[in-house]
Image 1: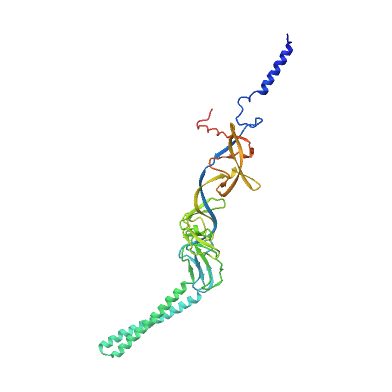
Image 2: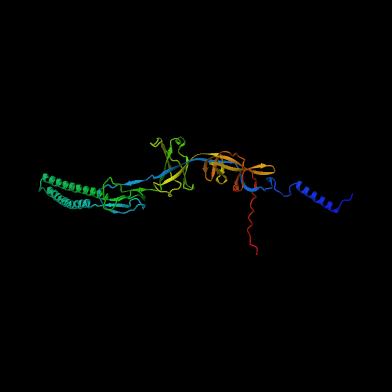
Length: 378
């Protein structure tokens, strides 16, 4: 039977279409693709492994100077001069305040005049004693008269000595009207003004030495059992940057009325960076142990629950699987994982905005190596 040329051509077209529809995937398609041929999404990933993690607690501490001195006068009167301002750094012996000293100065001038009279009496008594000794040697006077001259000389000398001691005491009292710095440091608040009347109970100012500071840390009594001298601590700023690291130098043996235990940290590291009475954040490092952590950028939060994507093998490729996580404290930029991840899991850390549950993924290729340095092309 002869078949027409048109029918042969139609049969050839139908056979070609059937082969195309029932054939295999075209060469070069990526493995592990989703139904419909969706290509896997390149994502960044890391293999989860335990690393040393510090167990810390953070407290607010106040810095106090170990050489803090409250300045109080040893004399009473009106302030005539304030030689310093708050924040000034002073050396030992520097003038701080002057108090009106008119009364002791007048007393000193009176004593100086009295001393001049007493000195005249001494000079006269010595002359009389020398004359009496000469006359006694010549037999012109009796021994009793000589003894009287010696008594007058001793009395005049004693009277002069009393005046000298009174003058010394007055000069000492007069020195108290000039208030000097007993130690070097920084001047605190100056609550008095020129013209104020001050007494021995008046607090003029405070001198703090910022080179010798201690952090006073109040630790709740529930955590105090782990406190011990030598425990490492850190002072951090609001961004968590470490400013100083020092060990605990003192732990109080008693509990405060606030049910806290006082711990002191002497600032050797960071000396000169802080001021007395400054509030700082202190981290006490209780221990260091291995733990699994996850970067903050790899997490997503849905209805208060944290999730992360892991890369799991499936077929000839990988798919993204979402896992719920139980998180612990934040350490730097990583959360401590208390449940949901295990060592060896392949955590997706980049590109999570472009994937969902069951999405095909593949490891992101490494970036191109940097071109070697050399002269630029002409």
